[in-house]
Amino acid sequence: MLSKSVKQIALLLIFVYLFLIKSGYTAADIFAERVVVHNKLSAVTLDFSTLASSNDTKKENLFNSVFQPGGFDVNSIRIKWSSSGTFKYHIQIVKTDGDDFLCGKLKLKVFDRNFKNKFDGQLLDFKIDSEILNGNTDDWIFTASLDDSSQELKNKVCKFDLDIKTYYDNPAEIGGIFVEKRISSSISTIN
View (cartoon, rainbow, N blue to C red):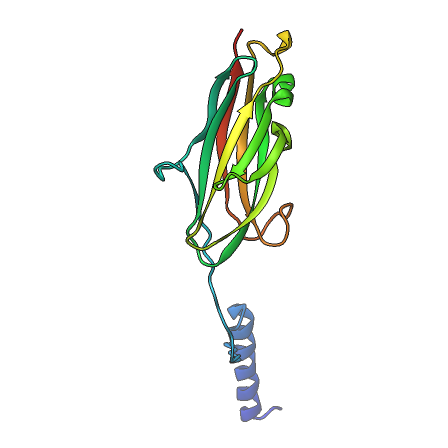
C-alpha cells in the first residue's frame, strides 16, 4: 500500500486543487514606469468679444431695420481678441429666415475703421478673412441698402446672422479648437 507520507501529500494536493477551483481568479499587480524627458505642455485659450464700437458693450444685433425702397442703414461692430497669441477669423453672412427675393436684393458695403473698402456686393455673398493680435481690436463698418423698388419686395423680411469663427489653417475646417459667435440681424420692408 501507499505510505502515510504519500497519502498526506495527495490529501494536501486535493485541498490545494479544491481551493484553486473555488477561488475563481487570482490577482497580480504588474507595474511598469517609463520617464520621458524634455516634454513641453502648453495651453491655449480662445475667446473674443463682439462689441458695440461706440462703448464696448456686448453687441447682440447688427441690423434691426425697416427699409423703404432706396433706404439704407449703417452699423458697426468691434471684434476684440482677449486670448493669447494671434488668431485668424472668418466673417460671413448666413441667411436664417425670410424672403429669398428680398435677401437676394439687399446690398452690403463693409469698411474697416479707416474707411478702407473691404467688401461691396450682395448681402448673402459677404465673406472676409482677417487676422488679429492679442489685445487688439478690429472695427468693421457695415452699410446695408435696398436699391430696388419692385412691388415684390414690399412687406417682406430678411433675417440673417453675421457668423464669426476662428480657424487655424483654413476657414472651411471643422473640429479642433475654435470660437464661433453669431450676431443676428433683421431687415424688413414697408409699402
